[in-house]
Image (cartoon, rainbow, N blue to C red; front, side, top):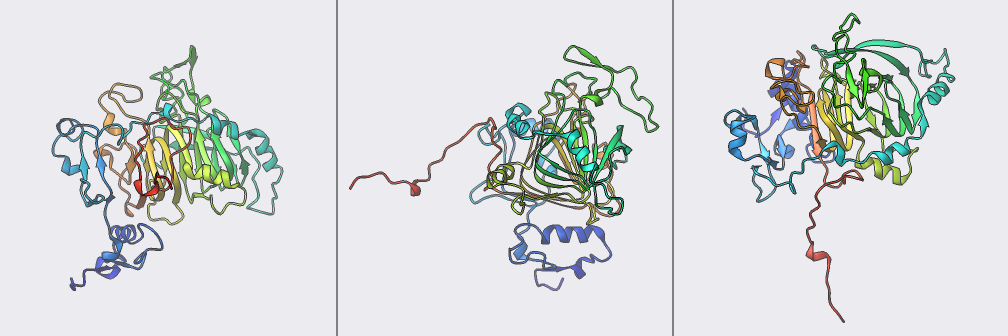
Length: 422
């Protein structure tokens, strides 16, 4: 209004409007913390704001997009500014697979991480429990507590309930969490590789439903049985893993088995509370381990990944900070989250196939923020205290995880090589 080409907190009335306050934070804190204008309380040319920095590439041709998912003009799905690189188009249809590769769960090799996670879970639980000091509230709590909670945790529309064993204030090193643990870890530390085991032969259409519970603990689908291999299983919770990490610290990475099918009810990893991934500052990791985990702090192909809170997007105690390449089947990012790296998802929903019942494929997507159920997200509604702040900042210096199968394009840099004689 004053013609100075800048917006202040006062002009946006951030003190009385949570939405403009979070928008101010989103724009003012994006990018390198050392850049001019970072978090200075003013939105101006120094912030160089764009919703998307770079290109959008789509495998489909434009007409297929218009006739399919968009159901009309595609521009309605790309509101806000897109800032491509110099001489690049902001949106490109009919991209080939060398520029937009279709990753599947089988394109990621997790065997080496499984080998690294050589610590026995039960042994480490017993060792931690023995350290309990009743006069110290930060010491490990003895195992044995059970929490009955909904999945997704905090969702207004949960689809299952779990009896979770609770582990508090414990430290685990290179641990392998067995199938069927379905635990809640509160204020725990994980050093090295944390490997979550899951049944990979999960292709039966009943895999999500066998063993589901109502809110009162009664069976939801008592007639549903999943066949795993050739064995009937009445409760697939016993062979899958649905884990929630609450306010935990990771000096290393979280890796899972790579199930054949995306079964979001059973194979899920949830991060809530204040979640920290510490690599460079870790005194417990070697230099080579730091480099390895920088490639991927979460490697969970074909697994559902939930981050953040459904109800408290403005709560500073509900934050998740990630770095490196994050791999999941699908990811739901809500609240206050920062990813410095890349996000890769492996599940492509197809109607009437796998977990997608009927023509419901639009309900299976990677969610950034909140969408009400009327818009297709059957897990969430818009919270009353804002929509949070989510930063996904691509870092081209971080390589993809080891063992990935995909196309490789080599481009010569002529200035770095000269061939000649004396």
